[in-house]
Amino acid sequence: MRFRLRVIALIGLVCTSVVFLIARRRSVEVKGKMLEDAKSLLQISNTDTKCVKNKLELWPNFIKQLYESHNAQPLNCNREPDWVIVKNGRLKFVVKAKHVTCDATPYKRIDDATYEALAEVKGLTSGSPVPADFFELTCRGMKEGTISTYSNYHAAIKTRKEIDERPVTSDKKWNVIMFGFDSVSRMQWMRLLPKTYAFLTKELGSVVLEGYNIVGDGTPQALLPILAGKPETELPEARRNYKDASTLDGHPWIWKNYTANGYITQWGEDEFHYGTFQYRMLGFRKPPTDYYVRPFQKLLRKRNNFCTGSVPGHKVFMNWINELWRVYKDKPKFSFLFHSAYSHDYVKKLSIADDDVLEWIKSLQSSTALKDSFLIFMADHGPRFSSLRSNVQGKYEERNPFFSIRIPDEFQKLHPKALEILKGNAERLTTPFDVYSTLLDILNYKPDMPNPTNQRSLSLLRPIPKDRNCESAGIQTHWCSCLSWKKIDLKDKIVVNAVNTLIDAFNNENNKLATGLCHKLSLKAISNASMYEHGRDMLKFRKSADTDGRIPDFSDNMSTDAAHLRVNFITSPNDGKYEATLILNLSSKKIDPDLKQVSRVDRYGDQPKCIVDRFPDLRQFCYCV
Image (tube, rainbow, N blue to C red; front, side, top):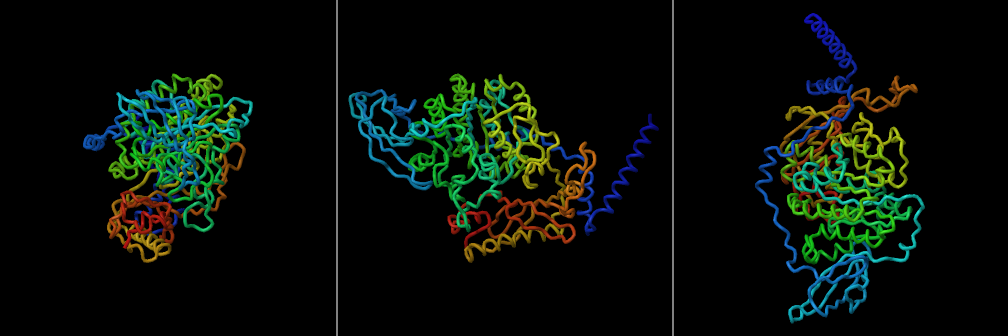
């Protein structure tokens, strides 16, 4: 036995030596042991392209300490309950008062930035039809012998003739309910919404995508692939102050497909000023969906940001979805509402929503809405600015937001394999692009069809390849949580030169768009540097040269001398903390300073106040003079 082990060891040593010599002969000759090590690492890792995910801890000690030291403050909603609720397209008085009458001021959207008040509707009583989708209600009544008043904004679903008469194709339609929270990783959802998580996974049968990976930085880079199927860079220019920019109306939005199939559509987010498609981009000329919450959110800016009267903001959204289901109970529906007030800046506040979200899900279940509705809970990304983000686990959590899907009861009966397929995909590498394909698949689902090969966007209702990697999934190196990075010397000349080249690009961009308004930045310190290099064969592989997939075709002209540096550094005088992925040419030792591959990982506050409205894309680089 010992003799056999020695022989095996000797064979392994010889094979390793041969592989090393071949790799050494083929590699581009560069100076420095650091780059040679990277080439060696490349050849070893080239044999396995399967995405291996880190097993993250739910409560490591540093997270326990972080959560113990901060307590979420309760919402300061009105203590007096609302007098009126909206139900089935009508007002319903719930106040204990006599002789109640109300007047309403309806509001109409002009564009994404403005609205107008319409003529006041007087003398409304319990049972009156709602006057508009959004309106301000003022009421008077006798409570305990005295005249009392009430004023509040309300969201409703007012039917419209063109929607009522929209034809529906004859085949079976599946409703879609999507509800999102901003900046919540999969682990944070488990920590902050434990009751909701337990009910979704243990009682309702939702499937959580553990291998879900973001494809870009921030909410637009998360929602555009989900809703339009492409990253921002592949869509028509829509950024403010850029040549030939236009509104987003022409994008291939998924709700257009649903409208074409007779669906009633609903979209909205609670943030007005920093709207996903309005802050950096030009927003919409026409309402993108049948029911669009943005005018309502501008009205609410006048009041408590977290509440509408006595109702917390997340419950306002849930009630609005419920109302769509009541008013159009016999029509197919697509709804996606996204909430950021509790979790974008201070994620622990999200814990106050746990009981309400749980009760809402239970109400959907008891109302039979889930019999024919896909239920999706999701987040755009994990924490980007919190103290958790400065830890290694935080980097992984940023790239792994929460995403769960629950298949309708009736769909499962018709297609019993679908749930098992979805469960099988849970630990595989998945992305926002896949959500878009899944939403398309729901519209015209045909079982027993595989996902197309060589496509970035795959349906989650069909098997995802086990050996899928970040490149084939459309995930850039900077965002891929499957990669193995090798730490390198922070003082290495290549690293220092690369960071300085990138900082020069910051300054050049500032000077080009905002001449004289921003301080010149310089390098203060490098805190981390790692390297990853693509394999030669991976770069050269084009396709299989035979029908059996046995013989590779290495005719691709992609360069083989590129490495990737991931660096964390601090600049002066703004003390800005950055993380960037840079492409290094191993022959010339030069980098490509791509600013799209840069993230600022601390808060910049009011540092860019002089350019924030005119040039919002410079926010992370500009420190105003």
